[in-house]
Structure formats: structure tokens, C-alpha cells
Length: 176
Image (cartoon, rainbow, N blue to C red):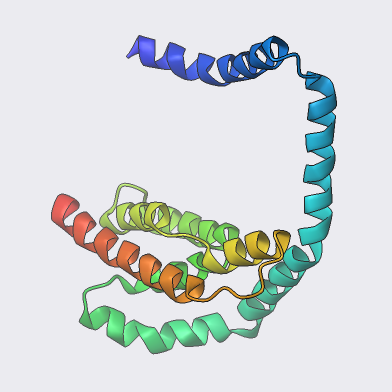
């Protein structure tokens, strides 16, 4: 176990060192390339900032308007029918939109039920098996100027649904 901790501590410094040594061997001006990359990264941030701000404002409006709570109340009877904990409905809904909002809801679940409870474990597995679809699509597609997303949204929503279903099945199978 001690060797794993040592490897874990050394991994990132060794990667940096490897990049620098490789660059020196190839006679690449390392600092100049670093500055160019940082400049490109900053330009990307500036380009996606309006999309990011719009997404954050719309999430705030969705939460403040009560639409999320209303939708959660509509879905709760179906959740009970299929043995899905109704407390997790808001997390599942927010997870596809905003990871930070979902994380806030996860912390509430942990405070209420505990992280080692069945619901706490199920929450953790769901968070690990799903993605923030709308955030990811908007940021990545806008940054590379993709306008036609074709089946990305439907495929991502289907993958998230599969992740949620498998999370519930596995959590019940292992911990119930």
C-alpha cells in the first residue's frame, strides 16, 4: 500500500519532468511553447465565457422559479413505482445540467441520510456514472464552433439514463 502512495505522489511531477526532458531532447523552446499554449487557453476561456454565463444564469432561473421542484413532484410517483428513491429525483434532474448544483444536492443527501446509507451510496454511484450533458455540450461545442450536434444530445441522455439505471441496480444488489 505504501508503494501505491509513493507512486501516486510522484506521478504528476514525473509527467512534468518527462515533458520537459522530451522537449529538451527534441530541441523545442519549452517556455515559448508553454506561453503559446497558455495564450490559446486564455482565448478559449474568453470565447466560451458568454455561453458559460448564460448557462449559469439559466440554471439559477430554473432553480429559483420552482420548475425543478415541480418537475420533481411530477416524476416522484413514477420513481416510487420503480423503487427509485424519490430523494434522488432532484439530483438526477440537476446532474445533466450542472455538476455544482448536483453536488450541492448530494451534500444535502449526505447530511440527511449519511454517505454510508443506501441512498448516500446510490447517490455517489449515480454521480460517478452520469455526466453534465448540457454544460459539457455547450462548452465543448461552442469552443470548437460546432453548430450541428446531430444525435449527441439524445445519445448522451440515453447514456445518462443507462448510467442511472445500472447505478440503482448495482447499489441495490451490493448494499441492500
